[in-house]
Amino acid sequence: MLQLENISVRRLDQHILRSVDWQTEEGQHWVLLGANGAGKTTLLQVVLGYLWPTTGSVRVLGKTYGECDLRELRKRIGYVSVQMDMRLEGSVSALELVASGKTASFQLYEPLKDDDRELASHYLREMDAESVMEKPYHLLSQGERQKVLIARALMANPDLLVLDEPCNGLDFPSRERMLSAVSGMTEASHRQMIYVTHYPDEIVPGFTHVAIMKAGRMAAAGPIADTLTDCVLSDAYDVPVRVHWFDERPVVRVARD
Ligand SMILES: Nc1ncnc2c1ncn2[C@@H]1O[C@H](COP(=O)(O)OP(=O)(O)O)[C@@H](O)[C@H]1O
Ligand SMILES: [Mg+2]
Image 1: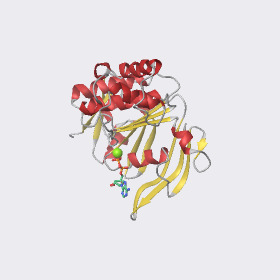
Image 2: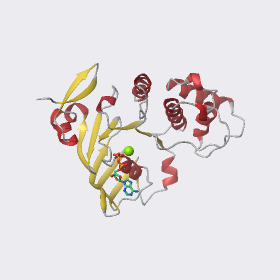
Image 3: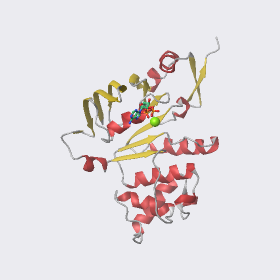
Image 4: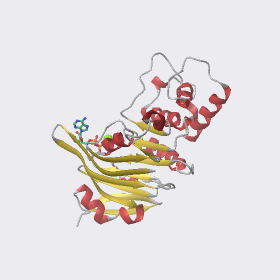
């Protein structure tokens, strides 16, 4: 699905990414971990073709960047980030906004077709956000907006879905509801998910692999059980930590001894 080789990105004399290799296969779902500033969002910008790396080659969903039509490829990739907020003119309901995800262009001011309405409400239900369906998007809370934007991304039925810190700024019950929706989404067999966070405890059942970035490098990448270890995490975050597992979720604590 992803084949990144020797990716480096340099900006203002600073190395943001250094020789990053990353490969993902069909049937896997990945969590991309790393401290603030480690380079996660930059790496995603490369994957999405918004940022051209200084060195390296990028192949996504079988297409090599530089040799393919990126606009066509992006239709197969869903991307939702907290940093991306919809700038909307006027009042648009959550349902209309979700439905507009079917085609990348906004055609919000045409009446909704019945089957689009049905599909949009299906994805809002999948995100446990049915109750906000008719509400204006601009009045929603941050957690509700994130869910609406994820439902909107699902509307295009992408082969790859990238979520960049969707739980940022959520209180803990909202966070748990978001995580359970995300865990449910890993069950769609054809779609690969990449979930980006700096909190290891957001790794929910359904994810199979984890990639850990540190200071622009890929510190570790592989199956969760082999990669999410005391040793690897202590090294990646530069503090001694222990990983404990509760209800199939990792909890990472700084070691006291
Ligand atoms: N356009 C840019 N120009 C210069 N520095 C940047 C740019 N974008 C990001 N950075 C820097 O690159 C580093 C990695 O940022 P980012 O990829 O956003 O990290 P993360 O998503 O892991 O928190 C940070 O130190 C950030 O300040
Ligand atoms: Mg980021």
